[in-house]
Length: 493
Ligand SMILES: Nc1ncnc2c1ncn2[C@@H]1O[C@H](COP(=O)(O)OP(=O)(O)O)[C@@H](O)[C@H]1O
Ligand SMILES: [Mg+2]
Image (tube, rainbow, N blue to C red; front, side):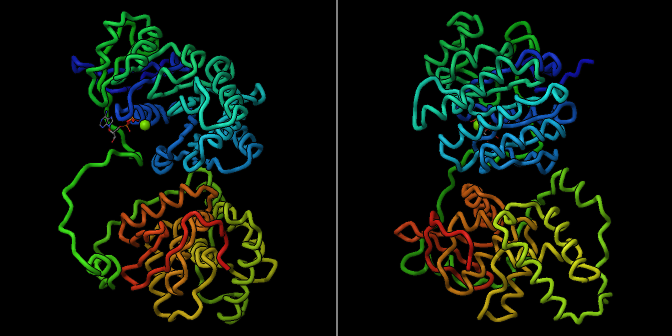
């Protein structure tokens, strides 16, 4: 079977195709300066081939997590221990699930170690699960650097070894490496040399150009054309692409990256004195609630969906069959949740899995029927945020939870954690605390999450001069005290 995927269009207007089966055997190297469109190109390949082949993306910047929404990739956070990462990688191969391995927020040493562990996990599996798989590595020079840098020799050894395995010995095991780099001269030679297909984008530096023409077996003069390419244009060459250098304009993508280029816009006139602060922190009326863009839905991944669909959910029956009165019931349910969350790992578990545990505990406590999944999510969000806010007017807190309910359910606990701190005039929680409420160990995800909530009008972040963060909730007229974003505290007491 040959499967052709469409990369985009040739200058003649004809479609430019890539032979997926050939690619599995011959690998691909993508080179181009920052902003030349490499990540877009990788996304195009991933989207076009998602239905045909299993995929793993090594994603240093959290750029590809949006593939989860539309294509069901499972996002694996790199914050776990190296042993756990190897186990997860082996399961990925066993169950043939496509994944995005998110390394955002780790320092270079941590990124190298995590990527090394994960890639080795994909590589070292039993022969009977050597199914074909695309392994896409963006910014590959980070994982296979030529020179030493801000990382330990040990981390470099692990990560370079794993990249070499992927590119040199992966084929037999079903792994097809697709690597992209902005600095060809900084990518280890043996790793680059194993790719037989090339997509060359805009390249400025002579030293990168020289490496490219060596690899492609081109005259330097011919490689000079790489300087004149526009964003999104690449020269294709190789058995899966074209026998002669072919210029291709990469086609559009369906999902969105996080890293779209910033555009300059004129600033509005600056208010003076306390007026600017007033603008940010003044109480808003209820209207922004209506005008706010609906949050992008964050769909459960295929695996979690399967898990939650596996058992039919009981309807939210208003009359509890266990005969408990509602208050007694609430207290019992709250007790079960508190017990569950006392386990430090509970913060990082998927809701669908926690819900199964919860249902069992309810059965033992003779609570019947247990709250349904949406009800459980709501209570879990409040419990993860450290419970309802003591000393805050009930009606105000109810408004906060109503606003939280407009967020994707994975984000509610983090929102309520922040709202609770603001309502009680406490310091703004750290990235670590926010990340924990979001179910991840990566502080980088906390920054992303705040950006998301700010963009969608849920809150406004600002810093004081000491770099401490203040978060305001315009609709609730609450704001936190300044807090250190890099503080170490995790759990809210
Ligand atoms: N073929 C293309 N069509 C439309 N937009 C593109 C294309 N290639 C890149 N872009 C846009 O240009 C910007 C930079 O592209 P990106 O893929 O992030 O570059 P790189 O990864 O090489 O730094 C992004 O905003 C991206 O959406
Ligand atoms: Mg990029």
